[in-house]
Amino acid sequence: ATLTLSMKNWMGSVANEDRRAWHRDGLHQCIADFNTFIRPKLVIIDATRIMLTKGPQGPGDLEHPHELILSTDPVAADAYAATLFKKAPFDIAYIQLGHEMGVGCGDLAKIKVERIEA
Image: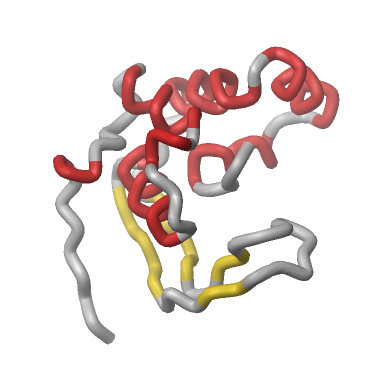
């Protein structure tokens, strides 16, 4: 996948042999499907520092948005986070699929973003 955000992060809970099958059987669809089953109460994405290239091992280009993204909607959280990586949300197939499947909202025009300064 292009990015690992909250929806793809669930792959860590999947056994290695099943992860291989996900890659073989259509990774983005598997990620979206899994997110219809697992429904977190709260999603937290740490975007204080992000790797724009050569992730996750690096070394790559880093940026420091200094943001934490909190949402009850994993698709919305990932859609907003994608913009920090200079990507359109629906360019990430699992975000578009999650939106189409009703997992959450990936349409930035319909997502309410509230900024809280610390």
